[in-house]
Image 1: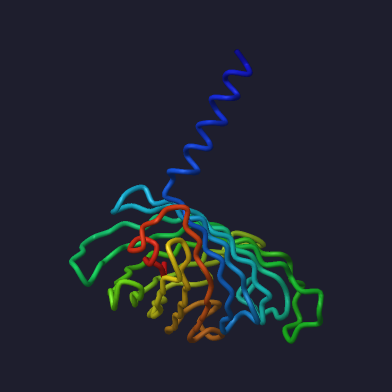
Image 2 (image 1 turned 135 degrees about the horizontal axis):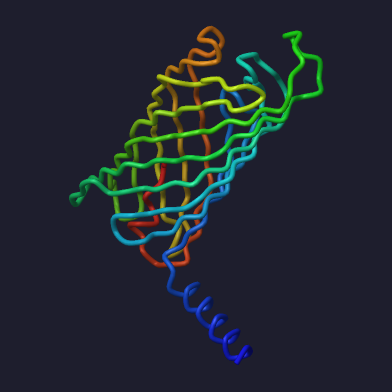
Length: 226
């Protein structure tokens, strides 16, 4: 009975892998805060309207903020879950909303800092809602733009609203390289408010990468930028 159960479970996993609307993104980029960052994302397409998933980003940071004080040259990571939902669509334009929520960790650098402060490792809750507009330029090439409203609330070493009242404009594109592969490029920039209000005025970020899909749906595979 146990062997039969294991066989049934294994066959179910194989069937799910064959039929699942799953894709994987691998992106590399930089930002005003980061020398470089790498993002791995898992996407699950529930239907034509809903997409869910998770992502992990590791960053070699140029600077971050801990207790509203600037710290330089260390490592940070972000782990998020997300949902993307279609609001409207016609033959050329699609409007989606998205929301990401997760946890950010900043490892305090052991280098001597400009600010004389006893830095500790930081943990923060992050929330990133937004709107995404996708424009079909051709069967293989989609543009996207939109707006993000990132929020960061530091939990430790002490509770602190690190980033609020910010809005970033997004711009990017996706290009189909075949039935299952797509090339991705994304950018965002905008004014930001946080870290005491005096040390962070604007942000920019760019990244590029590849998407590999387990399903053959070129249109869904080119919805990116969230």
